[in-house]
Length: 441
Ligand SMILES: [Zn+2]
Image (cartoon, rainbow, N blue to C red; front, side):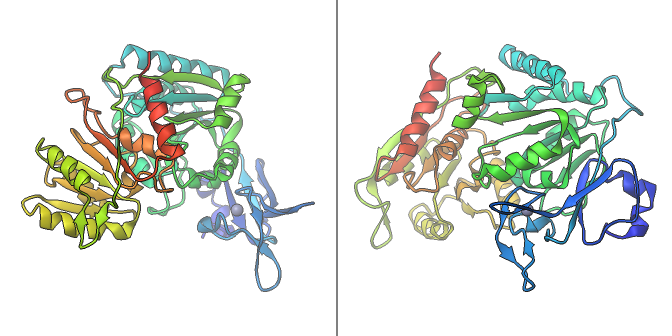
């Protein structure tokens, strides 16, 4: 572990800790400028708070010492521990005049937002980008990331989901192919190096302290960060005192929009997809009888629409709320359509990436999935069915994201997205309203 004094005395190893925060069980002997510590857990009048993630701690060890359960995946923080922080230094060496090797072109509306982000970077201000699914957010970021790197600034792109990290990393590595990009998430465990550009999960931000001049948080509304307190705490600590945070989302929260109104957050709105077409509006289908009728027969109305879509010979994604339903639907559908190729996928599925890849390559006809594929996945020509869209697992942000899988290709901007439900919920209503609102000029 890093906690050993002999490692700490090695300058090279120590430099990797620039902009980081980490736990030590004993006080370090090393006196370096820029190295400070706070208590791992701090006591306020209303309780004990974790200094790493900001959560109130209620868990205790057998000896009554408090520890933090919320951020325990990064190593346990105890009341008796020290949280060390090592100040980041400005990068001055080996700077390039340009880092961007991407040769694509932005649409005029992408160009406008790219410019607005450059302005916020120059003024060190925070910025919210409200863009529809399929707007081409990643490309809009390239120029501002490039500009920050040219200035010797450190940039971090953080997102709540590992899948999105895996999706973004190769695109950025291709667009900035002269530098090494740091990639960190819980499934690829290694301690961060000192990189100018880092792509990680929002959880990993808790390892950093005043490290970045610019933090871009993508898909800020995504599960598992429904509880935004830890995310906000982490993002605030990881950015330098004078630095910028950019938030990207298709569904901004009320709190964010309130900050925009108070002019504490700059705002860009992009209503059009990169190909200029409208978002496909969900087709609402109320089912009177259950989706699966007894004797393992499917609801006739669902089956009727499914057959209609199968005839298009386009890939079909079917979302179900619960993992255990996947095998049930698979069994029924396989019997009903023996000539079609089916697969199922969920968060704990080891073969998840391979299955999505074969679906993308046209080796599967129908992929049954949980919300794990709600975002970050682009499949050409896909048609989407959401079963039990009234289930509580689908908040409006999730429904908008799922609907956003459809019609992303330039040569096929339309497609079917069905919400099947038994009860018309506030989430369904809000999702459709937001989509229609974005389509309105
Ligand atoms: Zn914590």
